[in-house]
Image 1 (cartoon, rainbow, N blue to C red):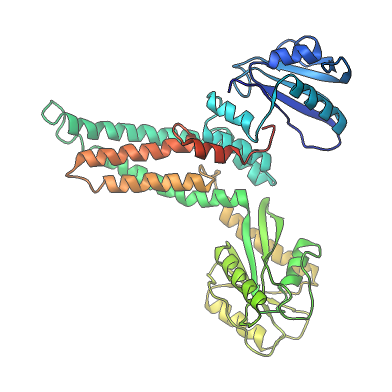
Image 2 (tube, one colour):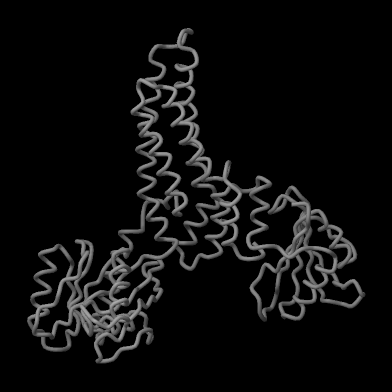
Length: 445
């Protein structure tokens, strides 16, 4: 990190203002070279920017942030220029001519992490805040950036340190004046931590769904009305609708905003046995997508005379949608409603042509997603990485509880559990893991 980096911090294209950021030891020299002199620290100053050949680039606001009191902990600066592509391009060329290097994705935030301005969980909160599309995602990302997971992790680690101290005292000083039950005193603390970790692991799935979107699968036989319903919910022609069975071959995903949360609606291929290789692959993908979804909507053409096949994998949380209510209901609708109620599924009789019916369906979906994702407070863990490390720590502690007669092995399990928790905030983490995490950031952040 001895070189100085720069990058546009605003999106490419025509805009009123664009921001170009710098970080590194040559930042102050770069300001002098382009703007004549550095402004007072943390004060915006209007300056004329000139290239090395003396030609004017633009009139810009220049801000100077000396380290360590900056985002990255290094000397930093920002140039606020007019947002035309030519202006930004000329400034980027001038900075490159000074020997500065274009930043890699996430490099500013990685430097903030490596200089102790953020821990790894907070850095992930930065990425989530940039990617936030809904108010729920924004709130969750702010909690993460504010150190919610970091504080919980620190409390867990302190408890593990105390438990480890008791176990090591029993191992290292068996003949000294330490209480005979010192090792036994560690058990309640470890058991309490296992319970807390298990609760956090379960809640982490809620955090992942807030980030990635609550998945709703439309499943059923060909021509049941799945694509028509998808288009009605999306309020656009997202899927092709024809009278030909098997029109939908792949999963069509449409993002929706429901009750302040991101939802992903998946229109799937009609479920049936077929000799068509392409359609068969579509059916396989449909079943796989539905199996991983948070909610399945079993769509039934209520006007058909024959009973529909019940899809695999339905759960009592799912819904049966008896579609085409504007047509005369036949045995398919009656039987599907009875079968759904027998399985504990909710039943809605609707038509995609009816605004009131669609409002009713949207309201029902919002109730489902609110019940699944809302809580008294945002979850501490929000990523698969967090959940895997919490699971590793919990398993280590469970194993430690089985080592009553071999306290040195119990102590090692507790030590490994603490190490897993440390990897959440990045106290210890392989370089490859850090590279993978920061590569998901945008350039300029």
